Length: 168
Image (cartoon, rainbow, N blue to C red; front, side):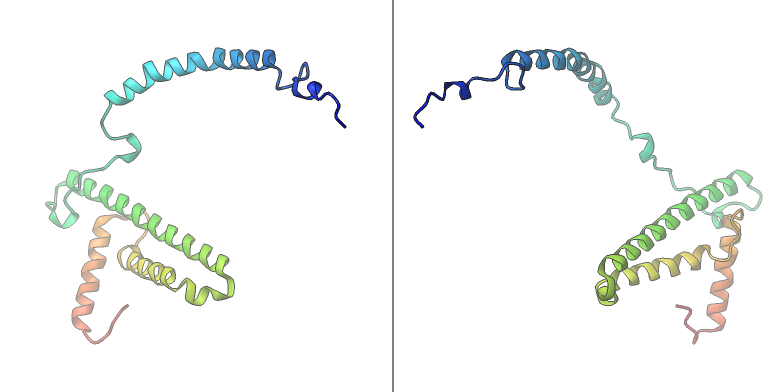
């Protein structure tokens, strides 16, 4: 009962608490970490600080004139308008895709209560999908801004001829 407990306070030789093993492990860590840390602090970070321009994956294109602002026989302007249209379509499609995914996750998570807990997400998705279809629906995939412009023109003419009918 009142025996000597001095054996319990000394680290056992070869265990993790042994000071020699800790020193060896720390030395190996420093041998690997020192060159990596030196390279990062003295080469990588100064280069990153010097390059303050936007990252390539945050590229922002200047807005170009739309196809209705281009001259009739200006193929460069029409090409740029088409490329802008395709980028806008891709962005809008991704927004609709993300909203749909959020709505599906909410419905899956909430289960039977999703009818009222996910109503806001469902409304946002339905509005975004409707707006997407108004702008890009029924247009062939390889057709660009001219066909979308014609679709918009025909829709406006139809709405002017049928003011009592609401499309959405």
